[in-house]
Image (cartoon, rainbow, N blue to C red):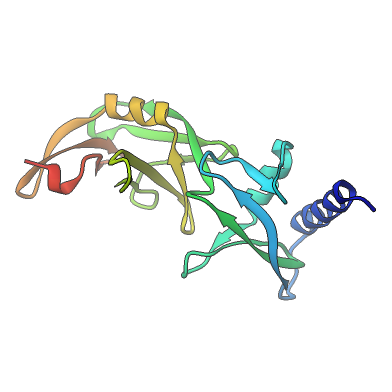
Length: 189
């Protein structure tokens, strides 16, 4: 069996396990699955892109992140660790419903999830230490975040306003009655 065939069989096994119904048995720990998610939200198996959107979507539904920050694909039958370069998902679209403090900011991810910025799904912005550029994220579910694509972040900034929070004036956005700062606290006047 050549390398491509072995890779296809192994990926098909993981896909079948992910699609299997959940039972009461604890999944078998398989170690490392050799799946990598790059900083652009693209998924790879043994260095080869996974081009089937339906397969990436399926894997995204069984993705978990533990308390230590490790990423796992946990199927009913198997559990294996994967590597994620930045965030496992990418927010590729922003929709605004309403206006002002009551507006809802809804993000669509590269795997088809929709998430509204709210108390359970906060927005946060880090600063890249090397470039000093903002790195914005939204919590999708259970410690799994989506990094906002640059055009999505620019659209978000266009909706921003300055608001007094405590003793400082911060720049950010409102969603579901919550103000999410987009600037760095140390930059606030």
